[in-house]
Image (cartoon, rainbow over all chains, first blue to last red; front, side, top):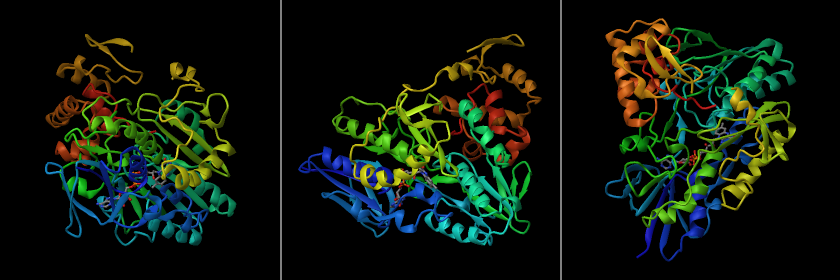
Length: 416
Length: 104
Ligand SMILES: Cc1cc2nc3c(=O)[nH]c(=O)nc-3n(C[C@H](O)[C@H](O)[C@H](O)COP(=O)(O)OP(=O)(O)OC[C@H]3O[C@@H](n4cnc5c(N)ncnc54)[C@H](O)[C@@H]3O)c2cc1C
């Protein structure tokens, strides 16, 4: 009898897993089905560039159908309920799908409804997010009309996907305003719940000055309680007010509602998993890959990619009750746009913070870690092509899944 | 990890003074740690600290403010009043637990 592998969510992790597993698992033994609520796959890293009109909408969207290999069944419907005890999933249209093995890849989403006042009259008039396609496009229109005033970039709470994206936004906004001769008339404020723009000591030391150099005010340990709609201000739990003319916020990020509804999530709707095998801590035949998992690493496409590598090696063994051959290490690497055609790169894992050095080749690069270069910026731009043409189809790309210490400057670790 | 003496307690701490071995903690030490950051512990503080200790024993990770408010039933506003400025860090410090990690 064929077994059924069901993947929930055809985003970054789900698409990679379905495509990779289709090659690994014999079609006579395994059916593979993947579910998503619509047929539009979005390249989310591109949302950073939409507000500044550096990317066109068609560069960040593709039909999910075109991204999945033959032999994978794509079902377009919202997932309503997961009954992990029974091994079934109920869809919005009432269909019930049974599975032998389930992979949850439903990601995380911005939830402006969780902060009082955020979704009110000011939403998409003076308050914007760029974590959704619509939000990024609405912000593009707002920026076109901006004449100055106070622009506040704000993070509601951690964890968020791509934790560096808000900083990148503020760097790009600074460069964009300068290029338009509007920087003098615009005050830039960055409000974060963390104790600094970067919290890991070596990165913080190296990068802290980037904000100061650009005359960006940083408000740290800032946890918003509500938005005062009349007064156009953020108000924190300890009553600090930050007035704004334009607010670009990253709302609270939460796992898919279906996770909480199905009793599978923690307080933010993320599924508790074993951090090395990505197997659910509650159900043997449930795995969670990408942003939907409660792993203590960044929620990022790069992490999803490295986690998929481990998953693909282990899955065939784990379902036979054998020992895994590989352990996920929390590896993340993120480009950080810093404006004016430059960028930084950071590379880290569960245990090791970002350090300076070179990537991916020790001492050669061509990317430099924790140093602003043009090559890093070009690397970020090249990633879109790689994403559509290599990563999602599951073609091998020459990046090691596990973090390597080669080429990294570890002398700073002792000093830190 | 540096070993240090604090009011008669021999403890191991990290560079920022957070205990590295939660087993070295007891309630008497909590009073001492609280005094270090200018706090006098009341029942309301203890409710939060007990939640944090119990949750850590189960999860192996320090609870976030949101977790304390959702599962421990203490509103975030109150946590800010009890542990002013940086409640997540201050609670972890007094509870003898690792600093809660934010990402990058
Ligand atoms: C502005 C921005 C910039 C970013 N920049 C970077 C970057 O530079 N580098 C990087 O590595 N990462 C970046 N990321 C993060 C990256 O996009 C995500 O971490 C990555 O997409 C996570 O993959 P995933 O598969 O876990 O979730 P997703 O790709 O979000 O996929 C989840 C899928 O599940 C579907 N889904 C959810 N609930 C349901 C349901 N109930 N029924 C049916 N379908 C459902 C969704 O429709 C979606 O397709 C960025 C993100 C944003 C928002």
